[in-house]
Image 1 (cartoon, rainbow, N blue to C red):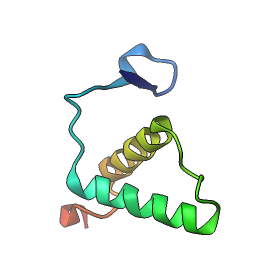
Image 2 (cartoon, rainbow, N blue to C red):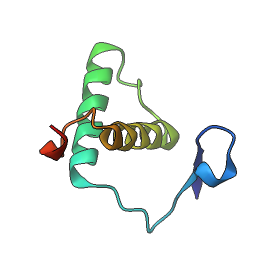
Image 3 (cartoon, rainbow, N blue to C red):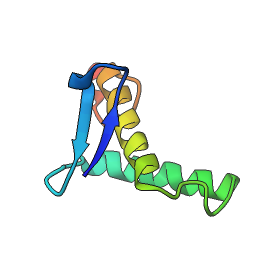
Image 4 (tube, helix red, strand yellow):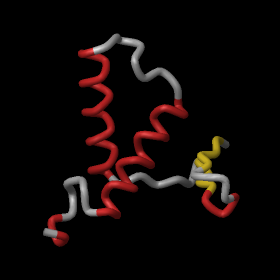
Length: 75
């Protein structure tokens, strides 16, 4: 099980395990971001699970702030 820690607050730790559910639109956006990064930088630009987890968490964070597509109710 991998953990992602935000800031230094232990309550901000997100645990990834076999029960973790990711929204389909988040997954599609992350896949697209990885495709673009690999095309522009290198085939090995995004290699680890931790990098993918960071992207998923970042997309979800932006979504809660209303800065990323997927939920047009904020506009």
